[in-house]
Length: 88
Image 1 (cartoon, helix red, strand yellow):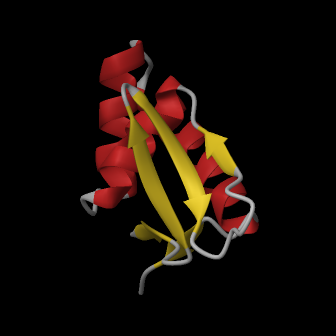
Image 2: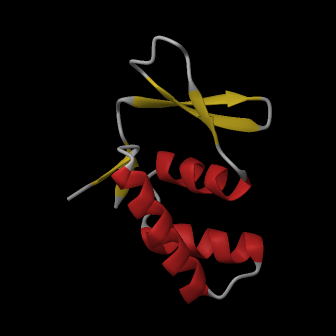
Image 3: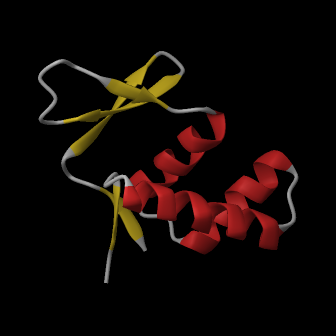
């Protein structure tokens, strides 16, 4: 399982979602695209990789294995950027 890094917060502005550093003085934020928004929303409620893959596959009419592979790649990128942490 994974969770958002506690050094970042999720800001909902209308239908858009931003990730913002809690320590950001200049207020910079990352605007998430539609699929990233879905993933972040599910991470916030504790979804695991399989749940993320199922949701992505359903939303975008993907094969489950393809969705899971995409999720794993994306989560790895988020971890490398320090936005997501793996839970034991």
